[in-house]
Amino acid sequence: MEYTADSIFSQFLWLILFLSASAAVVVARAAASRRRRRLPPGSLGLPLIGETLQLISAYRTENPEPFIDERVAKCGAVFTTHVFGEATVFSADPETNRTVLQNEGRLFESSYPGSISNLLGRHSLLLMRGGHHKRMHSLTAATFANAAVIRDHLLLDVDRLVRLNMDAWTGRVTLMDQAKKITFELTVKQLMSIDPCEWSEDLMKEYMLVIEGFFTVPLPFLSISYTRAIQARRKVAEALATVVRERRKGPRKYDMLGALLDEENSGRVLTDEEIVDFMVALLVAGYETTSTIMTLAVKYLTETPLALAQLKNEQDEIMARKREDYSLQWEDYKSMSFTQCVINETLRMANIISGVFRRTTTDVAVNEGYTIPKGMRVFASFRAVHMNYRHFKDARTFNPWRWPSNGSEITNCATNVFTPFGGGPRRCPGAELARVELSVFLHRLVTQFSWIPAEQDKVVFFPTTRTQKRYPIIVQRRSNHEL
Ligand code: HEM
Ligand SMILES: *[C@@H]1O[C@H](CO)[C@@H](O)[C@H](O)[C@H]1NC(C)=O
Ligand SMILES: *[C@@H]1O[C@H](CO)[C@@H](O)[C@H](O)[C@H]1NC(C)=O
Ligand SMILES: CC(=O)N[C@H]1CO[C@H](CO)[C@@H](O)[C@@H]1O
Image (cartoon, rainbow, N blue to C red; front, side, top):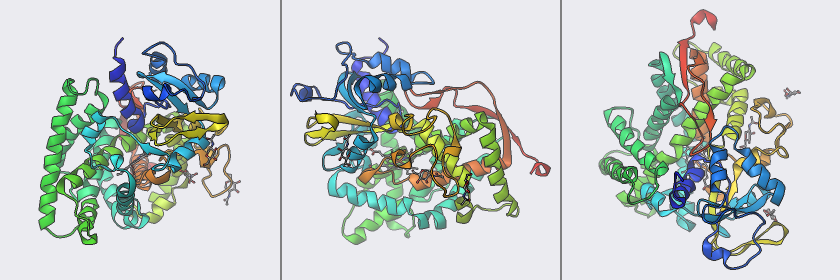
């Protein structure tokens, strides 16, 4: 076997949760299964490896859905399986998922393996619980997700940095790499008001090693890339700590770091370590997610010429209202209605975070008299819902027209089962910002360039959602008379 069960398990927890491997699983602790509750039905497969190999081979392809489909058909939407070394219960049911998301902190709590917490830092939002989580979540939302803040401050930076990066594009462009560079620079700017420079480029290099550690975690304390990731994390933390110390002395700025430092005024002093952990995790949360969606939106559009033409039309109309060297305004963003449909549809198809892991804090009854025992890991799968024909007509086809672009009735889908950003107390505080970044990116791309794929490339879902070749394209600047 290529991976040990243990390595895959730790890898998998992180991947799925954060970056999207895309299976959907509830992981039972061994102790829990000994307690003879009526777990949801399912098959535990072979001893030790369970159904792991079936899952990996499904997710290595462009069409991983059968793994879930077969089990849902046999056992229902909440079933038990055994993957990556653990008995696992899997929810493909939107109702159960809602229960899991809404009861965060009561019946369920988020749960990450130790190797991941070491890289994130223990004071990161993702690892906080209870009242402290609540407070810091709303602080993040107030700073990042607030429409007024995005409108008055962030949108301009997003537009400027996207343009700055695209100005350098000629010929062959590896879209995923470019998208990552853009999202990294954006996050650094939003967190601490630092524009792209040598410092931020060095930071990005170290930071990419940290990210690698998340994927290659095989044997946490032996693996070279994990050790390297931990070292890189220390360097990233040192660099950020320097910024924090300088900012404590300097004038106030309106960014995430400013908001964290302001906490002092409301009586709660955050240590430098707490602030740094918090920011490292924010860098992680917005980076791979947004850049992958940027890349896949372009791929889906390229493969759906009608949608690309309609989106181009919409964006050209916005540009036609402008003079040269314009900046996008909030009203422009708000008028990109078809673009929002494309973004929703990309989020639905790609399921970059395919679902979330929780752990039960008490015995929880689920449908038809089954019980998830206390202490069990639960995976609520968004992917399984988003790809289900019952909830979305032609669920496995990219169809942006299924979304209502003009406030009319929703057709061909049910919005209340669409949860790309999660829900409940942990709903993604970066959701609106991510939409703005994606919209601006698409605007600047289609109004300035035409492109063709440089090579055949395909989307796979293991170890993360990605295209195999990072989607290289050949761009050509659109000439003015073409507009
Ligand atoms: C397309 C882009 C994105 C997607 C699909 C996405 C999705 C998600 C999802 C599903 C969660 C919930 C995790 C859970 O319940 O355990 C989450 C949490 C989070 N996201 Fe995002 N996200 C995106 C972009 C961003 C951006 C741009 C930022 C910030 C700069 C961000 C910051 C966060 C943070 C801090 C959390 C943790 C919230 C908490 O635990 O209270 N995300 N995201
Ligand atoms: C996109 O999805 C969100 C739910 O996350 C929904 O509120 C919104 O109306 C959708 N947008 C469009 C254009 O349908
Ligand atoms: C929205 O679009 C649908 C279908 O394209 C159309 O039937 C409807 O009249 C439009 N509604 C508005 C308010 O423009
Ligand atoms: C199938 C299932 O677990 N359904 C539950 C979904 O959540 C609601 C409350 O939000 C419960 O009442 C259902 O039993």
